[in-house]
Length: 352
Image (cartoon, rainbow, N blue to C red; front, side):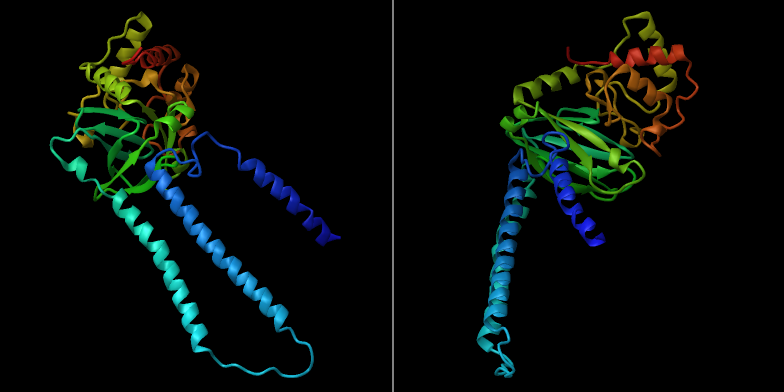
């Protein structure tokens, strides 16, 4: 009876696995490729899986045939065969051929995806992004456009976007599952690669993709997320112009926001910038840039963007992202100061 009760768990687990397979955000899966790189990787995965399944099927069929044909029918000992050079050559050559069939497209794709020569040209029009990973947030610097933003990456669709990847503290890994990757960000060298964001897939996804850290980096590794806004080239150029137009911190327009700006200048400005210029030395950029904070979709990459969550984050960031560097920085703010700072930050926008 105990064995029967265990067997009953199989259908239950199967149904549970089927239900869970439909969970998650749209276009967060590598099985829904939304760009050239992701499509190439997906095709290689399907191709290699098909070959492996084919090998398994052939082996199982041969195994069953041997069991059936050479099953013991009487007490006679069958003729003993110690070896067959022909068979040994066949089952040695076939794996080698399969290895070449797998290796050639894989190596070719690897070299193609590593081709970043275009970004090295001085007069390039390509979009280049310097990605800097920190505990537990992301910085995106556009060197050609001379702007910096944090936590939300903005890219044009239907063209190659080149990335320089680096970490400021420990090893991380840059990964946008639906679009391609992943690649390590190291402290001692810069890794380079490119991605392309499909406009049709981006439109279906609401122009939003999801990125993650794919390397265990500390207690809040699972919460080191970022969002990617994939827009048309015209929209991207418009966003760049709007960002570049911010040459000094935005001035508060209401009495409460003005008080919040004073709190910011006394408490936050040492870590957070509110202008997108990339003139600040990298070593001084120890927290996300907040120039367009009011336009973002998330707070700290994981919380819904609203005033209530912002206040909770400022008061106790440790409860949301353990071991983050902001912990304990704003615990002594009064309710009035917290309300004022929240209003000021929520109104930091570069686009209407």
